[in-house]
Figure 1 (cartoon, rainbow, N blue to C red):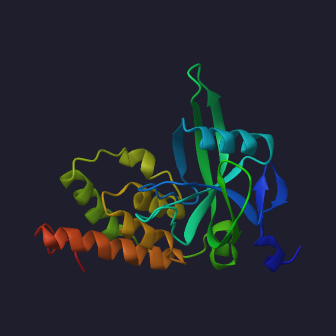
Figure 2 (cartoon, rainbow, N blue to C red; figure 1 turned 135 degrees about the vertical axis):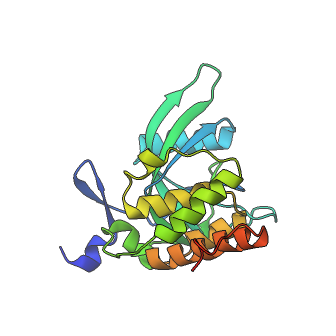
Amino acid sequence: MSLSQFKYFYYNDYIMKPLPNLIPIFPLSGVIYFPKTNLPLNIFEQKYLDLVNDCIKKDKLMGMIQSKKRERDVYKVGCLGKISDFKKNDDGRILINLTGITRFEVLEEKENSKSYREFKVDYKKFNLDLEPNIERININILMKNIEYFFKKNGLLLNWKEFEKLELTQKINTLSMIAPITNEEKQKLLESISLKEKVDTLENIINFYLLQKGSLSNQTIQ
């Protein structure tokens, strides 16, 4: 199989399956989700209960995308995930865990008779999400500033466990949980390469620390 073909497939239980071009979308304001991260969701609205139940019956794949302030408007880039954990509660709620696979670009919304929305999407722009990371990036300075930034904001993270993650997972996890604006997280989500994402995250964190006069000459370069 050629490399160009591989970019449109994902591994699931050691079987390569094609990525769907039409996916159900859960638009959610303030929730920005990255490949190779996990997102727990508490589902209680009927339309999203329908969405999750349909996904479970099909391929367990669904898209998450950030909604804009204007009604029904969404950003152009979101993340496709697979439901990796599923539990129905007695009160009707469904608890799921969504594991990120790859980012996608929205092409258009597909009209349907379902209670939830579906979109035609394209993955080509983010094909690196499906390939092993080969970039070598020094994040030592970034990590010093991130740890200080998190501490200043009262965020606790098990850094020993965090160190066990591979580089892409580290950057995606930090991008997802950092106490920054939704617009800044969206900018990180839309960064094509890992290097671009690291540089963007570094600039964002440095901006906050400089704004508070918290960057020392020992950490900023």
